[in-house]
Image: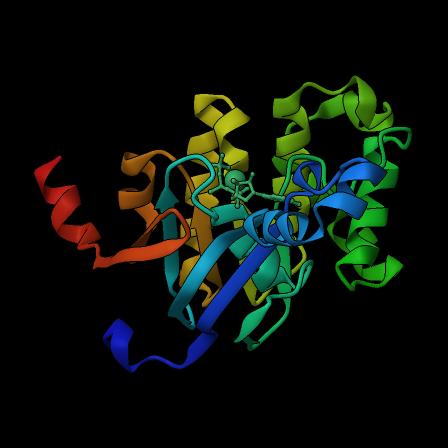
Length: 248
Ligand SMILES: Nc1ncnc2c1ncn2[C@@H]1O[C@H](COP(=O)(O)OP(=O)(O)OP(=O)(O)O)[C@@H](O)[C@H]1O
Ligand SMILES: [Mg+2]
């Protein structure tokens, strides 16, 4: 079945997101009294449009890549899909349970051990304690953290945090997995292992949205890649992964 014919897992329509930059607004009482019209103009100017009329859809079982320069709006878009923040305008429809892997260490508590954080994270992702304990050994094994699992997260390296985060997210049976660049801090072996795991999840029908700055990584795993430039969608390209493999 072609990607085009598949059921839609995420539908984003005419999405706009604006942030207000507060440092422009901070001013003196004198300025408020004497220059109110100018101040009002300044307030308008200090609104920063991060996403501008973004529309796309992700089909069920598809790996959808998002690329773009630093500050293009990729993480903001994933946070909107995850429901962590709200858009100003536009709609987002999501079918299925999302497991978001947004920022490094998000959802983890630094003072709790790896073990305790697995339980906390699993509960936050909607599993029961029993379901978490059933997967516990697999999560630890995949993370390769060994005895560090009994240590508080604050002593982990960024790669170790990424390992734990990825491992928890992929073992909670998500319908949709959002992965924002967390692989970048893992070593080459772990990156390969994560890509293989994502391939396995794809074969099981999991939908994935994957943000990365590595074009090679994206082409290896994604069915389509969307490029964002200053908050606007500039292209959505189909990736012929099988043809790519032959030419390697
Ligand atoms: N809470 C916020 N308040 C104000 N501006 C913000 C906020 N969060 C993000 N921004 C701004 O929105 C823009 C897009 O940020 P975002 O994190 O989505 O970019 P990105 O594409 O993920 O970049 P990177 O590749 O560096 O991760 C940036 O200019 C950033 O400064
Ligand atoms: Mg980002």
